[in-house]
Image (cartoon, rainbow, N blue to C red; front, top):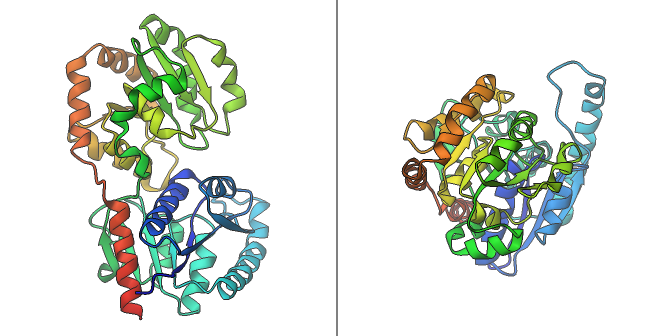
Length: 367
């Protein structure tokens, strides 16, 4: 295989699509330092900021999802789709990639569709146990489909599926060695237990309300809180950073240090987050989002809970469940240690490398 590769990676809308894409890019750069990598995202979405911060170029498409409810925005969808297909074709002709990789999200649809038409090999990576609509539509034309969960043949052609696991950021692989650095970075007290709250890159209203309702209880139990409110809710909750035991963030740029500082984590159960938490190996209380296709976050979380590797609280019984479960859990070092050991057993640290191995196989076969 030639050392000079040209790769386009497309995916975004949420961190669950963006960070796997960046992890794949980093692994490609590690193996092929001179390779050219271009990202393609959706205009006005978070990838347009996060990808350049990771050191990669990105171009945006004027594309958004089709709303499930009938709204005025849906009237623009056909126009956006056509314009995005045209621009995707133009990008492919200009960049001339050897392979195109999609990690889900609005922009990957037009780009991979045009790559298939131009006879460029494509690989898609599906993070969830229930695929997003974009990847389901692209599966027929894709050459390889990398999945994080087994038994995905009901959604994708079996002969194309490779079980690889989900990509994770490589800086998470040894977070236990960064604990002192994390204390200094966040300016927190090493003698107190630290609760890390994650509601996803955009935020989770129910989790934010839960934390707000229990600020006094956190203080009473001598707990300090690193609270990622999400970009959508930061202005509503930033005022609580005035409290000595609370720090609020719209977005945590140093997730490795946030995980290193944490003694316990309250989190949504998106597939990428679940994979990261298995690597990190800390006790987790999952609050799955009920507003996702086929309730796949609950399925992700329950897969761990069934192995005594996490605690799951549903939004419908969140207040009662949190009071009766969370604070007693914090008082039990034995239970905390058991959860940490069990979740660590489920890690798949080589997922990113496995996916890039499939990219190499694809390129070798294609040539």
